[in-house]
Length: 158
Length: 284
Image (cartoon, rainbow over all chains, first blue to last red; front, side, top):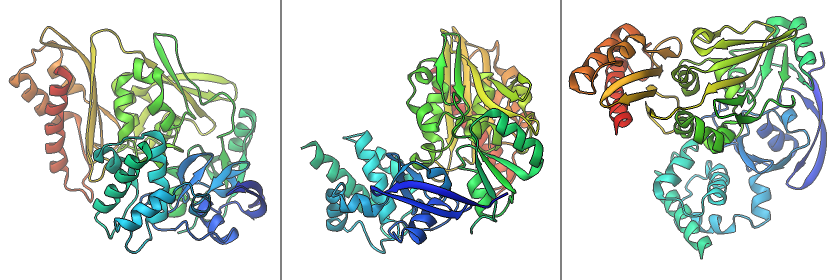
């Protein structure tokens, strides 16, 4: 049987069609085929969260979904959210609170934080910690990340 | 790592699934949420010839209830189960469990049926279905059959599913007046696989335990219904002696495997501690 598939999806609002090996996972597709390297590849088995991508409005592990499964889907990466200004306040708060050190986890962390804040406008620090529990950060010790997310939640509530 | 090459079929009908299963047998893998399968493929622990993606089969994602039975379609995502009012109302034990099932990004893809069919002994949902006395609906080419959770799980990642069958849903008895629930697990990081955990449903008549069901995960080669501990509880008053008897009875029920988290005896100890805490929560 053919080990390639034809796929069409929207990536950050732009419709793309490609013929790719069926085994290509979504994060490799956006990195290598779309040349969007903001989504990172860490553990490749769903533990670290560095590959977090948004598909049809919900975050997923880019390493645990085939690009072929995104047929017809709206795929959004850190580049899309960033360019659209959707997470400008989160990015600013991460910067100001020093919630970024090496930056490897940051794109996934930002997408996860954004999903939390769209579901829960006033999360407790415990709820923030629980929601980002699937995203490893090996630099910051998380404290500054929780601070940044908490502050943006406050700002957005006005 | 990257998976070994395979072909991919997005199945549109059940017949198409059964045709492929008949043709490829062991060389075909069903792809539901993929949150365990994809990791297995990435690590090349599994190298199938073809993946059969069932995500687009119609009518397998519904969550519904008729008051007596809660029905969860095999393709219902963990995040949908977590947010379902039917689940909160009729199966509060599942509602308590879902926040502990992996992380948000994984819950957005992972499916109820996938978790049950994969039958990971360390996963929460298989043990919860045993505690609830769930019945699974298995679809073959010529029709359906129903198998109780107590008969479905048969060993390490082994179930009663035949090669050419698909798990299409679960039927869960709705909680009845007076039934209480508790869920406990110990994990190194919230959302990770637990070191050990349990789900409990049962009643207290006055202060006497009745109709107790304790389902354990991370405590053996399959999800376990702790029959000896249940026998030590039913009909007995909720006091220190009864709890101690139930804790002691776990020796006959559980057979945890040593792993990176620690030796079997440590897990037995943790199981006893969690049992005491869960029964206290149940009674609270």
